[in-house]
Image 1 (cartoon, helix red, strand yellow):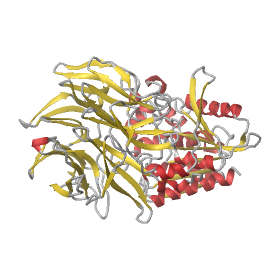
Image 2: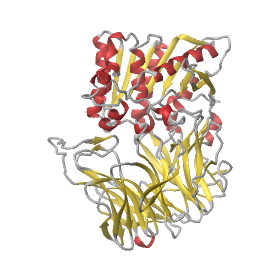
Image 3: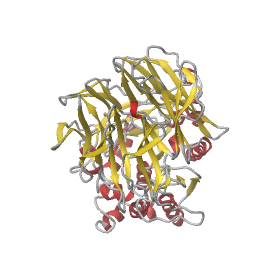
Image 4: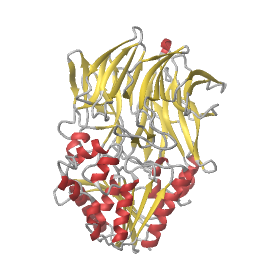
Length: 631
């Protein structure tokens, strides 16, 4: 068996955009693979009978995205360009590819609307602010990670019908969720004045009358999902009143008198189990008869659940360490993307979740020829008396009498979670002969809103959990050499690496990626800064100045002794590159060994969706740094 190498992300195929035909007979999805020569990712459409594990791959005429099925059984996809877009229809049997609709504006998505045509989510530049000479900003946020400069840009819904284009939503707003049924469009929007609003409104557009009504005002709820269930409007939303941004949503009926509570499960809806072996996205919700299927995070992974019209919620897949990364339902069948400790995502389909037929097979050759080391899981109690769930991957060719270095990996978020699923970077570390340690400290998803609440407490219970987890791993695995440990993390994990090196010298090296080092600059420059940071620091730089200073890792740079590699992308607008540069500069000012690798033309998603050459450069920097210090 071959060992897994960092560059193997170029050998895997990544399924996404899973869609079942209306009658449930066919399942379609996109397969993405890295194209090293073109420094990009190529997509092809896979179509399989839902009861057959032999998909047919169809080469679309254009680069496809956003698959959908028409009511007549045609497979549809979007070809988006910088100035316009086309909707194409594809005959899966013959491969015939025909343009269906020409759109005169850039489009992010589309939704078939039966006899009414298509509902299109468009991007419009209402107040151009970018010229050859300068960028001009007059609102916040003025940029967005993965989208670039957004000042003056808005998203808007249109109805395309036989070449006629009719606006559905107002001009000066941003669209969130859109659900289209035979005679209506349900959508959420955030009005824009001088800054992006915290909450969203819910509106209904009547396709037959061309009229709009407001179901929820824009001043109370953050809305996760909306759909029709049993003839009524179902809303999944939170008012953030108790736990702030991390408060798990509840389910409501939207009635004329307001929202009527249906269920409050305190579940982290959608799949927040992190992985570096994905590309693209999949649906997280689907109506199946009189039930809404959805995905939620648990302590061991993520599961598929069903909500019925009485508010009853039942799990449909086992809590056994796998992750459900996407789903769809139609015609009495359910399709889903399943990730396990031994394989990246695969497409399954059947009438019973968890017992379906695997339809995808593109990665069979890779996993049949490469050795995957499944993580060992354990739970321990911290000094506070609370349980923490952790994982350890034992090095390849492990000798119980040997001594091995280890890498503590820290996830982002912090409202994300690790599971025991396949993670390529971790597998490559274990193949190199290193222990890999990872856990879900306070702030992680899967344990309810209370466990996720770190407001005003960054670097306290989360730091304690990580250090005591490391102690527990050393106790359980005596072959783990406590003098050869590295800490490594990105985003919130990068914040925590920065915090760790300023508060302990136990790690022989560290790697801080797309990090946070200064909460004041993060508040003022990140694309979600003034909303996310104000919530998580429980104040602003003016109302909670000492907290912002005291919880900023850069303020402890004079205590650092750990050689640290910083990796950042110059188009990261979630945690702008100044965060990494500040910490790097501070360490070099105090004479601490540090290196900054600034990747060009990439954003916050570098480690998961960066272009192949840039992604490989990140991995090369990371592994060379670890090779140097973990010898």
